[in-house]
Length: 385
Image (cartoon, rainbow, N blue to C red; front, side):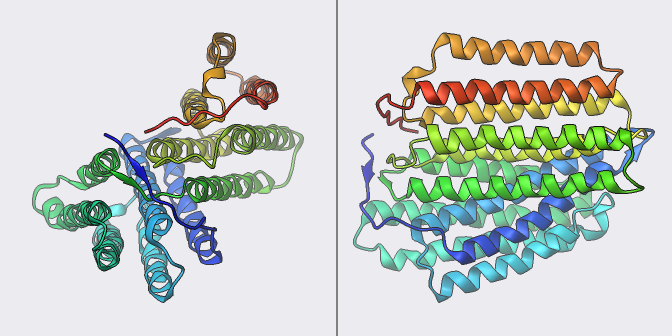
């Protein structure tokens, strides 16, 4: 299927978009607080599942909002009102993100559903502006239906859960992901401004890193000792190394001017931001003796691998995709395998674990930095979703 690229003026990130993103900093913090509910040093399975679902819900809402603004936003009065409404509704989602979530189930899902309805209605209103473009009209209507149907599933969650004890909320998330993916694959006209899309994704990642830095302030509670100072320094170095790796990929490798729907790029950022959230909590746990050592080590390993796999997969959008040679891939894989083995060998020593994490993160950054220098002058590649 041949995909046509719509020519339109380059979109800039507006101030209101940045203000809108700030509410997600609060919600990210609320999501991370779920993992602090411990039983005998372990995170309960039910709480961890709730954490995953709440985190993916918020990231999906942000994704839907970003795509609408990217394709149809005009920075007008209607756009402003709809964004402010969703900002207000996100407070209810943040407030309802608790371990005893049953008490906030109704408000949480009403707010979630209304956010989806708000976005879906905007797509349907936009139909009046594309009557002369059949492909754009069909594409816009299809996305509107995806949002409205997901909203109906969300609204059904409370009565179904009350009647049966079963929550269909995960199916709402799954429907949104699959529906968006199919929608993107069936697109005949690319309306997306990929430059704007990558910038918005980068800003969300930056806000997530901001939440990580704020979380590290917890090491000052109860007074700063040699022990807490060591962990604080190691954690700070980890955050800096992770940030520099993302910055290297974004600034020097991603071809942000390519013509692309960015569907896979945004999907990868869902996992990338999710991994950063888990890393945040894992780093908070490192000096906490009340948390069993093995689960927090496993969390950290899982989060690091998820972050880096997601980050490296974005290189399919790089200026030189073909330069992902075997030597570079094997170096990355070797670092990951060595890191996992050493972390498990020294799993009973958190001092060594955190030091190994610093070495791994900065080792990956140095590999990426070298790779970016090597590929700086290579020709641009334009992959398609």
